[in-house]
Every structure is written in structure tokens, then in C-alpha cells.
Image (cartoon, rainbow, N blue to C red; front, side, top):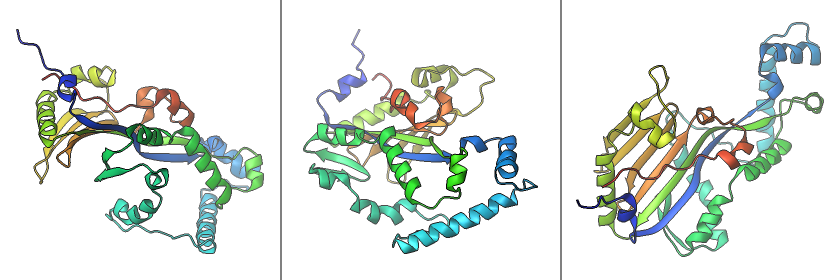
Length: 289
């Protein structure tokens, strides 16, 4: 019997660059002591001294906060970007993001691949640069801006326990496998599509996500194969509030994006410190060819 060709066989000797990075993270800053109705009543009546804990009081605080932020932006010559409906936010912000590119300052020569990397002179240094972004960096950045920006809560409110804690709202981890020749990328992806048609079915969910799906398990479980206008193919594997997207990138790379919209799905709290021990990893290419 002929030996089954595995993913590693296809990849072996044909990968020019393999990089993983944090593609996107949405953070939520909440006040822990204002998460229940009784806590809100205690804040408005017990702390602020209002006889009636009306929601309108928060609107007044919010209006003052928005005016303070706009004044802060004007005073510090900070651009105020207002996105229109259905406007591509990345295209609007791209010129500003380009000016902040770390790779130019780090002295790492690279060739761009849309919103990724096609080649790099020092892959290990590039991966180390990508790995620098973690919970410590995010917390430092968040605390620095919370210290500088106007806030709706006063110092007295903070002393009474009304401080913010930052948690993960959405996390997207990406991995790009760049092949040394386009034909290897096409061969790999075509085989991948053929062998991943049933990955989203409940009895296969445990293979990818290590989670069992029962009849009463709520959420989305499916695999979708979409063909793009440019001839490319997109594979979406969905599990509850998470998704793996795999597609052929610019004819020469395999892009894998793992999106987690609810960290609790993985039995971890959304607090940033849990990232270090529970960081979701991009799912590896699956199947045997």
C-alpha cells in the first residue's frame, strides 16, 4: 500500500517563510464595580449622593467626557477621525499606520505581501518582533493613555474603586506560510480544500478545537467553501463564536486566520493576563493528501 502523503511532506523544503503574529485585538475597558444594577445604584446614590439613581446621570457624564476628549485632541493637535457608514476603516488609517511601521526602525529588510510578508532577510528577528506584542505591552499602552486622556471619572471616583480593567473582546491570530514557488502553493491549497469539506461537522469539531458538540450545544458549526471573483478559494471553519479562515494569498502563500470572539468559549477569562498561558494559536493546516 502506498504511503499517505501528509501535510509535512507537502511543506517540507518548499516553505520560504513561516510567520505568526497578532493580527487584531479589540479591547474592552470596564469598571468592575459597576457591572450590576445594585452596584450602579450604590455608585449614583451612595457615592455621588443623588437621591434618584437615574440613567440620565450617566448620559450627563458621557456628554462631559466626549467634550473633554474633543478639547484634548484640539489642544494637542491630535487628528479626530470620524468614519462614515460602510467606510473601509483600514484604508483610511493606512497612511497613519505606515508611519508607525516598526520594521523600518528595526532594520529588517522585507518584501510586502498585501497586509503581510512575502520574504524577509531575517525571519527569526521578524518573528521576535511580532512576539513582542503581548499582555504586558498592551497594559502599559492602555495605562499610559488612561493616565493622559480625560476620563469620565474623577480622582475621588477612582479612590472609591471606580477604575478600569482591560479585557480581550476579540482576538485574531494570523499565520502566513509563503511557498518558494506558486505551483506548490496551488497544489497545497487545492488538496487542503478537498480534505477539509467536513471539518465543521459536530463529530469533527473536537479534532480542531478540542471541544465536543452535543445536540443541545448552541452556536455555529459549519465549513463553508467560497470562491472569490479573482479565482481564489476561501475556507471558513466555524465553531460557536470562533472561526478559522484559510485562503490562498496572492498566489504564493497560505494564510490562516484564527478569530476568537468570545474567550469564554475556550474556558479562559477575557482578562489580558490570561493571554500568556492561554493564548489561542492559529490552527495548523489539516488533512492528509
